[in-house]
Length: 188
Image 1 (cartoon, helix red, strand yellow):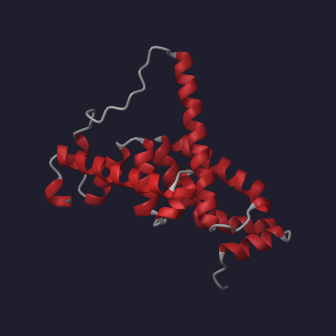
Image 2 (image 1 turned 90 degrees about the horizontal axis):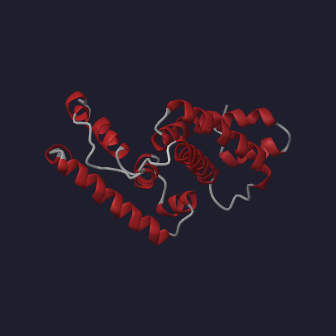
């Protein structure tokens, strides 16, 4: 069987072969799940958001205009689903405990990570997880998923200039974390 492109699969689905959607699920489930786990920091929430994302994509497939690649369109759905989950959780926490301050603290680093991690890549990814969600997301989409700046812009719904600025700031924040924890010799 030849390798079908996303467009060929979508055309097949739109012609009534809905089981072909499983091909898209198989193609994108791992990357999307990884992205959701990093954003939501909870595996169960990531699984639920992944299912919601695929359901939204399937139900909206007839509206896919092919202005961009399917992967970019789908990652935008995944990103927006994660933001919805985050907002929902935040509202719930605020309702339950109105006195909690939701400020992110880079100083609260778990020193155990460095001592238990042998693999440099895993260590850097754990450090990326310590960054605020938008900063981590832009680094993951650009470096790990290999999306172009234009595609990241479409996924995140921000301008090209904002993506470039966010990418620059995210790299600097990651570099700062690595320097703060004496890891510059191995990585930088």
